[in-house]
Length: 478
Image (cartoon, rainbow, N blue to C red; front, side, top):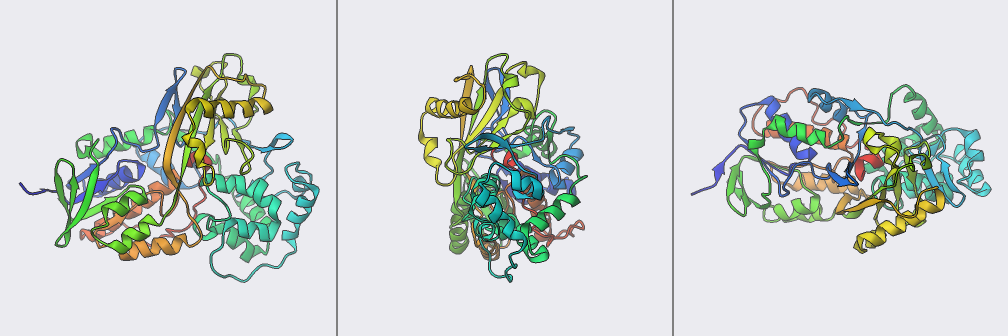
């Protein structure tokens, strides 16, 4: 018996894959489509774990509200959205946890606050102000976030403020992350305003009345993939079915699993880039090599549920970030402050993030050793007990793609070399956040429809696929 014939196969049932499938079926409800997922459930990293009788997010806990794509999708799906219960964030310093200064993308916007901010030395504050008088550089090739910020504002700002915020979003090293691929606004600010500070101030004023920065479905981010599954139809989604290869069959393809094969005119690869690389290796070695060249970092989420009457030990803040190498965690979320629920009672609930480029070895340690390390550091700065009553560690190996200098050129090479009918999507290409994934998947769905001979639905297929990539720590690892 030959392969079963369908028109489209989507490989991967995370938010990217399910959104692409939803958009395709929205345009053509009769489209013969199948979604293949290796895991026993949908959602990818958008899933929960039970700790101390509480359902807590194991991955991202929200998405950027000022990027409309995830918000709009939730509205279409009938999901009610909630804003965080706290707004301000803190940063880890030698003096303890201090409030982050008013900033845009980690660039301070209030000069009076900057000159008093205790997170920088007096020399560091003076050096930061040089940004206001230093001449802007003529546009040239892509550079790293670290290079740009060090050049404009000095090492301390890069290492103690911008680095923890922007590098943390990718679990990466700001001295390797591309400005053009991550936060092109930074380059535009230098060119348009002659100063990062002046550019950040203009951006901050423009966003002053934009509403909450982050939102999530009322019942948690896991509601989004579940609602998408219902729209796509569970019968179209094959769980626990990893794809082994994608092979050419004339102008179409054969998608092979351990049990059977599907013949398809188009294949959407909503998988990590390294998985996509193996799937297309037999189709195009150049594309496979470029896909495999996208590096990844491993991360982990540590959930801590403390005893009763500890909730007030947490500051009125969403959490804190940590400069590189200063603590075993890279950031933490005060869950019971940020997303308060009656089920928490008077218990403090915290999520700590571990692992990143250069510190992935922490993920090899036993769970209890990781929990003990982060708890010791928390107790040194906050009036929390030395140990929680319940804890868990969720590891996400090779989960965070690194948009290093030259990333956009690499993506262009991938898209130019893949055979017609193969469409990659996901967090490795055009943005790592949930909102970015929704947007990219929608664009890919339109490209698939064009490939199948349908008329586009009025979507601009060249609509700034590289723009507006500023995700949130919450979107990336929780």
